[in-house]
Amino acid sequence: MNNQCPGCGGLFEHTNGPVHDYMLSSAACWEYYGHILAREYQNPKLFKSSHRFTVDAYALQHPGPLDDRRAFQSVRIHFISLHLIFAYRKTHLDARNALKILSGQSFDPLPGRPLGFKITVKDIFESDSTLHEVEIEKWARCAYEGWSVLKPYAEDVIKKSELL
Ligand SMILES: [Zn+2]
Image 1 (cartoon, rainbow, N blue to C red):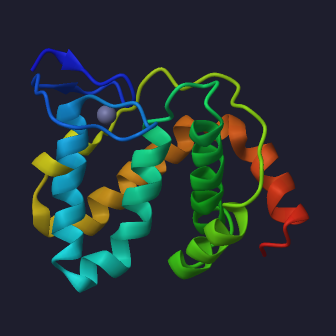
Image 2: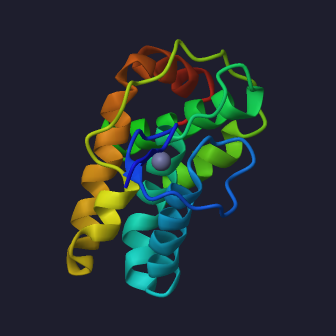
């Protein structure tokens, strides 16, 4: 347990597996994320209640190189997805539809990155799986609050793109 993930800052064992194209993570962190996704794919109830949070939380915690356009677009739109849910009580389906609209747009680069997060995918993996929905929502809030500096920009985009 001595390999720090360059994205979420969590400590993981060292492994040599694959990682995502532009989201920066350690191989072990990416593998844990795969386990969480599998848990949701195998359970329609969890998929419906948690999958949006899971994808957004992981993307926000693994921003990738700050000069990579795909990386900062990803952080911007996944933040907006969570902002619609947490600040405007939109449904996960609304957030998903917003992502589709936003995916073709271009966004400003990011103002730096959070230094680390209290909850990472490893905490989710190690928590009681019967509490999956509660823990995933906490994780998504943690990722969202870590990037709270993006709120004014998100507000602008939401207004301009008429997402409410
Ligand atoms: Zn990570």
